[in-house]
Length: 340
Ligand code: NAD
Ligand code: UFG
Image (spheres, rainbow, N blue to C red):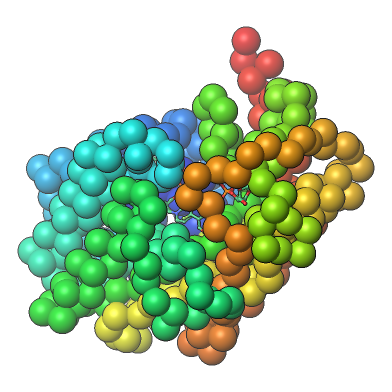
């Protein structure tokens, strides 16, 4: 199957592309490098021993998009491209609505025009569940008022896809990711944001290699096992596998399919720090800081549906993710030094 991967040079997209190539899929990437580096393309090739075809443009650009549909004739799309920083989305809401919604519209428009492309996988997020009434969160848990424009784009796109699936003969998988962490074991792919990381795991990575002095733990008075926030951290390679399984499900003409991708286990910030220290035999200095606005006590995924309908179970543990994340960050630092 030929798969168009938008945002394929980004964190989750690059790992998924490797997995797709390893599984024999033909992959075409569109990425405008707004949050990724072109080196990732060579690294994907280095790992998978195959080079995906690559187009550098904004998915919103309908002319360029159509030319790719005409020349490549994709049968499926995995749509990762979008902006994802919660805090930035509150500062620049229009930029988020524009990029996340219009890129999706452009792709759906192409699916209407080229009906041979009838499978679509969308990167949604556990953020759509907001502050949970109870955990684990199942796909039937209520969708809550979004606490950021970023979260709102995910809710809106889920609704748009649901309406689209009612009128167009398409198969759509809405995958609600919990918290992806870790990196490829080769140390070639991972998440290395510019500037101060917004998310916990990349922040710990930077503290681990000495690029930042200490971790600030936002809040120690949550209603959780140790007072720090609890999330469901899933290895990015497990997440990548989930996409391949979702494509296989769509191939069976399943229509609209909504599914969580998580481990089913909650881990607190302190537990993650301890796991990172254990996996890598290092110390992570930290300090408690005030709560971050919009954060919730706890969430983790109900995994029954993923298991039953996709055959999805996680292969990796938190310790694996901590080891792979540190390996990537150490290698990345070395690569940057060698470049200078
Ligand atoms: P990322 O920023 O690493 O990857 C996104 C990629 O898309 C980048 O390479 C960027 O250059 C590209 N891109 C953005 N807008 C584009 C456009 N208009 N045209 C072409 N390319 C464009 O992010 P990620 O962590 O890999 O996330 C992928 C998707 O998963 C996003 O939609 C994100 O909202 C969603 N998601 C991520 C998380 C997470 O914690 N990482 C959690 C839930 C959902
Ligand atoms: N945290 C810290 N210090 C930091 C960063 C985070 O203590 O420097 C804490 C947070 O308070 C929270 C936990 O670590 O308790 C996880 O925070 P992240 O920012 O890593 O992740 P979130 O759960 O807030 O959100 C992430 C993505 C969203 C996505 C969501 C899915 O940022 O885009 O996971 O569950 F929607």
